[in-house]
Length: 77
Image (cartoon, rainbow, N blue to C red; front, side):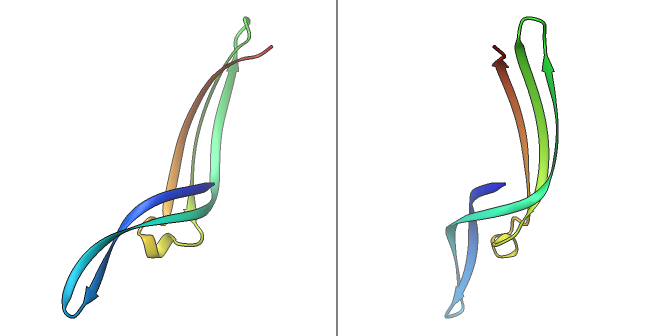
């Protein structure tokens, strides 16, 4: 999974703490499960969930684990 997120990072400079928002782009490796239903009129319903671990910036950004939930509605022709 390719993901993009914003995280706040605290910096300490001259005994003063400041917070700065930083954008991260990361790649996660994990697992997913899903199910698909097709009715007799050709309507398609699909649900899936998954999760993974960020491989590049996970520990630095504070988001080592990511998840996803997806739902789709379509027509099969």
